[in-house]
Image (tube, rainbow, N blue to C red; front, side, top):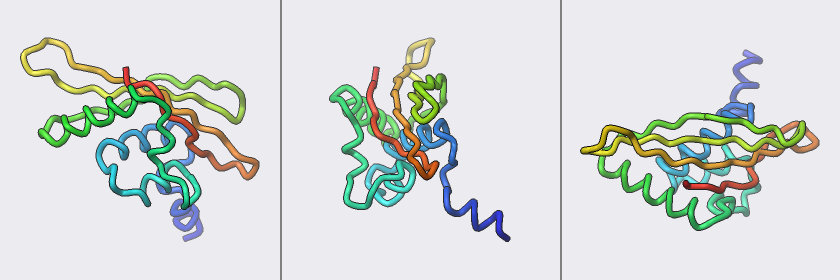
Length: 132
């Protein structure tokens, strides 16, 4: 029972890599669910999860992937790299793979998600960039 209670505190995985992948996937598949995005990113209620997106190319890439999903195209989300900047800061690369009709290879978009650990040991998403 105690384990179930503890698991409910961090429904999207405590590891920075899991949190980064879950956040990108939710940004694409459920952008209007601010509560879910806030919970994954672990940001204060007054902050907007979209404010964590640093650059225009990442915003355009998210819109592109949302359009692909709306067309019924299956997207695949994978963690492909985790660069540990220091003990409390990771930059996780998330690759989103999508089929391209009429082409032999799939299209790919990469995002870099910065995840930082606070003094209490909780992970927070602080930046999203990329989209290339």
